[in-house]
Length: 120
Image (cartoon, rainbow, N blue to C red):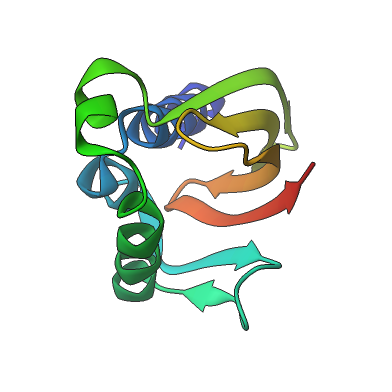
């Protein structure tokens, strides 16, 4: 997979987050995807576990706001590609809550490998 393809995968992953579209997010994930969030008792591994965790997060968003604004806003993105893994960092804000922080994402030719998030 070329660097451009890893960048496209990252863009699709980010689009899924901004739209709150778990199917779009999961379409970019490797089967062994690992999501690390200090608010979770343990890392979330795999697409099924991620879907369940996302559903818990998404349930707090007001239905009317879901229609009128993005689920998440992403900014301050930076990437580094070592030829096999694209590492991305970004700032995120959940538009319906005071939650915000940063994310560190790893993408390989097989798709999104992992994301670690931190809170501000």
